[in-house]
Image (cartoon, rainbow, N blue to C red):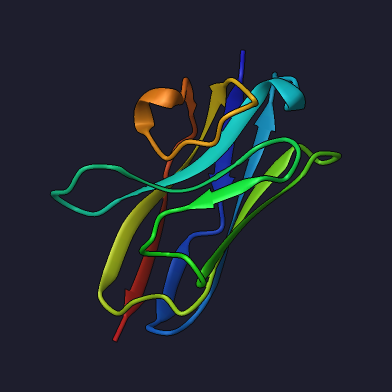
Length: 124
C-alpha cells in the first residue's frame, strides 16, 4: 500500500518561501511518478510540479522559476521548494504518486495515491 505524508505548510509574508516535504512509503521508486498539487478555496485542484525517479521535472507555467521539486530516493522523500509566494495565496498542497515512471504529468487522473494536504498561506 502506497502512503504519502506531507508536511511543511504554514503562513508567510508575500514574497516569502516555504519548503514542503512528503514521505512516501510502500512503492518502488523507479515505477512511479510523484507530484505536487494545490487547491484554493472554491477552485479545482491543479497540478504544480511532477518528477520522475531519474530527476526529470515538469512545472505549471504559473510556478516556473519560483518553485523547485526534488526528491531524495534514499529517504523516500519528495520536496517542493516554493519561493516568492504570491500575496493572498491560500492553497492546500497535496503530494501524489502515480504508476508509470516514463511520463511526467500535471493531471490529477494520472495519479493513484494521495497524501493529506498541508495548508500554505502567503499574506500581504
